[in-house]
Amino acid sequence: MTTATLAAPATIGSPELARSLQRAEARRRWTAIALTLPLLVFLLLTLLVPIGALLVRAIENPEVARSLPLTGEALARWDRTSEPPAAAFAAIAKDLASLDEGAQAGALARRLNSEVPGGRSLVMGTYRAAVGDWKDQPASNDFQVRERMLALDPRWAELPYWQAIAKNAARWTPDYLLTSVDLKRSVDGAIEQVAPDQRVFSRILLRTFEISAVVTLACLLLGYPLAYWLSTLPARSANVLMILVLVPFWTSILVRVAAWIVLLQREGLVNKALVSLSVVAEPIALLFNRTGVIISMTHILLPFMILPLYSVMKSVPPTYLRAAVSLGSPPLAAFFRVYVPQTWPGVGAGGLLVFILSIGYYVTPALLGGPNDQMLSYYIAQYTNVDVNWGMACALGTVLLAATLVLYAVYRRFARAELSLG
Image (cartoon, rainbow, N blue to C red; front, side, top):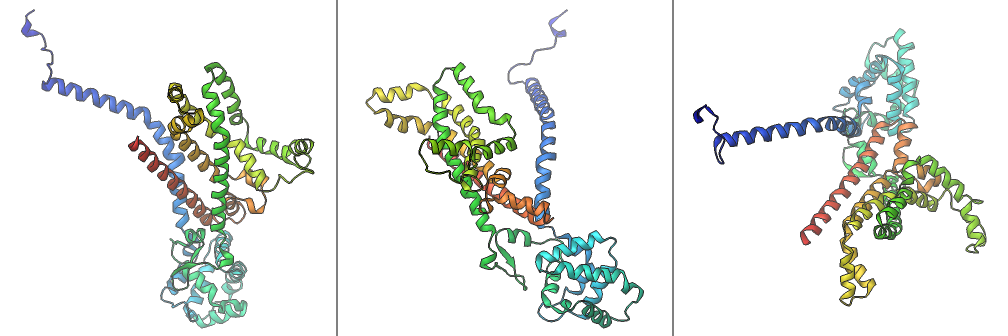
């Protein structure tokens, strides 16, 4: 066999070697895509799709547009200050009579009742008349329908009900998002603040941030020295103690909250210990107030602060601190000037994690807090389960999502600035 019959090996810089490297890189890239594709599909179905549905439902307003299409057309050119045209009365009577089932009328009635008190009874009463007596005795013209509706319920002569129908005739609306930040649309479409006695969501959002900030600070004050102590221990001892830190992860939140109810009640172990140690003269109120909420949330979220701190502290060489002390720095000054700055990434990551988890808490404040201690998630559940107002619930959820994204963006900005300075 001669040398000419053998394939010549690819030399450095040859086109054959370049094509071979490109094929190998393409195979590596497609292998990575194939391995990560199941995870991407899972995230798409369980995270991105629900978030997209949440954002869409926060601006969707289908009840009036779907149930009263003819009425929306009749009110399209109405000035919203004078009495609606007689054609609008005939259109709403025809729309209500054509509804297939009472569930649609119920959804429409709830939507209008959220805009104007009394809208539910007005719509349902007219719906029952439209699908009952009025079908057997059809009106000859629009004015006769108007007189019949006014005779049935004089409230049809009041403008707020018609203004609510006209304002919600479009399928898409900013009203839910505006309400979630204590704003509203006026009759002419301008955006304005709600009345002072109705500005509740700004206070609720502020309360949510306040409780979350206090819980984050408490977790930092308790978790930092504990994480530092764990980072100085031998690996075997640190692993055993870390198991104790992780015990809350293996216990249901409801079980932990129930345990705190037993501990914090008036005759509970905490009050008995305080009285026996003469710290207080009589048992103090620790349940159904802000104190119980903060104590329980701090206990539940403390591991989320300790773990990032511990991972960062283990990477800090202990020789830095000893070197600073050997150069004449007092131990306490060396700790705060040399050691603490190197743990800022752990403080930022732990603080961000605890704060984001805190602003979405629902069970703990609902069981341990009072009426003035409920966070935004409580009202999302209220609109979902009690009021059945999905638009408002999704709007409040969008506010929480926006707050989380803003916090994450701020954290990334400060982290990038710290890395550039470092």
